[in-house]
Image 1 (cartoon, helix red, strand yellow):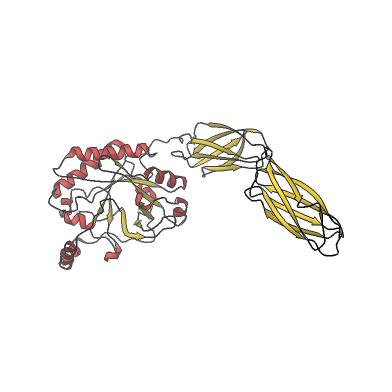
Image 2: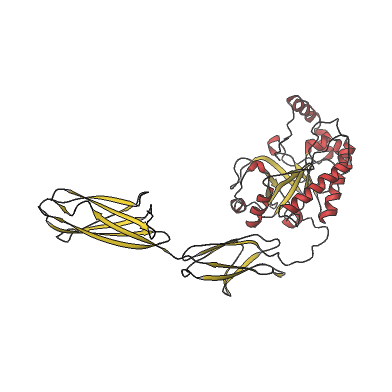
Amino acid sequence: MKHAAKLIRPFFSVVLLFSIFLTSHSVAGATGLMQPATSANINGIDVSHWQGTIDWNQVKNSGIAFAYAKASQGTTITDPMFATNVQGARAAGLPIGAYHYANPTAPYSSDQAIAEAQNFVNVMQNAGMGDFGDIMPVLDLEEPASTGTLTSDEIASWGRVFVDTVKSLTNRQVMIYTGDWFVEQYNDFGGQLSDIPVWIAAWTRYGNTQPPAVGGWTQWTAWQYSDQGSVPGVTGAVDLDYGPTSIDALRGYLTAPAPTVPAAPSNFTANSTANSIQLSWSASANATSYQLQRNGNIVYTGTATTFTDTGLSENTTYSYTLTAVNDQGQSSVVNLSATTKTTAQTVTTVTAGSSQYNSGNTAKLTTTVKDSNGNPLSGATVALTVKNPRGSVTSVTGKTDVNGNYTYSYFIAKNLRGTFTVSATTTLANYNSSNASTTFNVVK
């Protein structure tokens, strides 16, 4: 996990640890290894504001089955992307949980652990995760990075107080995220946290084909095996994780939650054009789908939180009702009325630079497009035709400029005399098309 105070071991520490590693294989052999990952384990990622804006639909479609997002840090900090990540993941139908980055400091204080736990719970509640996540909350325990400020027993006690506080406030099991090196640095926490589910960080790029058994843990619930992953929908590197073989094993309910119908959708809004209405709403807790009715008839059933109702009449008011649905029933109804717009009218004129020309000259033909208030319309498509006295037709198309004009230079063939007919038809989105015509003569 990447944080503002990312843990970086100084070079001399790496050298020291490497020398310890060379002499500690007998210890690893004695304590053993946690289980390896297999194809049955589900895949996940963990993110924070460092990943910026995430396309959660792409993430889910890539095969990711769960995600954790940083919610809070210390006693006051909220990750600025947490609410956005929760809403985005849930809208994509991807189970998401929250983690708190702990900042234990000396001297040891259980009150500090309680205050950080309360901050974590408050952030979840205030950011649209009042159910405390689709998967169990997590304590990210990887500080203090250097020994000497808190003892192993104090670290273990701090973690226990935090976990117990969050459990009491949420009725959810809490998982501990930590690194194998951190556990070893603090003497395996004396084995005092081994009854709590562990999410172990042991990256394969350091040669970990499976995590070492540390801290009294012999089985991981989740394993962060890379900090340099690449997943569609996420810009740059992202942490990669293995989870259990079923998402239910990550739920962490201490007692089964009482079955509840979904909350009513919020932020139900409409954006109208002349012949369509785009409706959108925010995801509802516990919803598995949504049902949308127009004037009492169902027009949409599905999991998306947007729907465009098309083929509607102009300047007409429609009544919509929206409900969230799950296997326990439907939410209360949310009502919204929306009125389609009236298609605006274009006004087209076409003129020739002169009423008379000689053959071999060029006629300047200008089409001007305005709205009904006389304002020029840029970007309108002009279909222009010129019919010569012998019945031959020249057709061209173009777009009006910022002044609402499209100009075409028409070359008049030699020895061609008589009346030329010019016709223009203009089209523009959300406007009715209009036509205009004119003539000019070639006298010699």
